[in-house]
Length: 195
Image 1 (cartoon, rainbow, N blue to C red):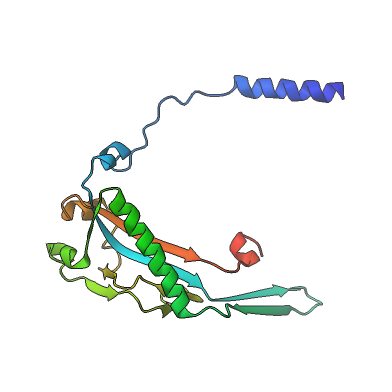
Image 2 (cartoon, rainbow, N blue to C red):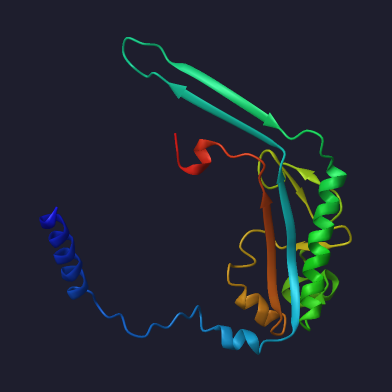
């Protein structure tokens, strides 16, 4: 027991001695830092506000891939019952109203899709009106909702990059926001890295 404790102490000291000092690190992404964000325009364009509710989950499993034994396959399908599309749409509307209230409370003004379409690169973008839930729009088994009265703009793949900085410049420094919330009701072992 005494040897074990001494070994642990010795290894701990050896690890501490071998530690490296990293020094000062600079976490900048394309030069747009939090300090600059704090002094950015107080205008925000919400490109999209999607809430995806899982309504169906299907899972399969296969076992017994041996030479002398056959294989077995099992499947499971779960569906969300007792919740209507209208209830989910109302939840999305509440999330959006709360989000807008917090932004306006912090002094931000929200740019509408019509305002953004006045800028040259965005004039051809397709408008998508909210308030009508869409099944399997973004993922199989999910109901996608956009807030009632909200208009999203779709410029096709690759128009908005992950950082949004070029689009922000095209909009006169406005902050570009993309909200995509997923609300699952069930998880399979497969989604947690199993099987």
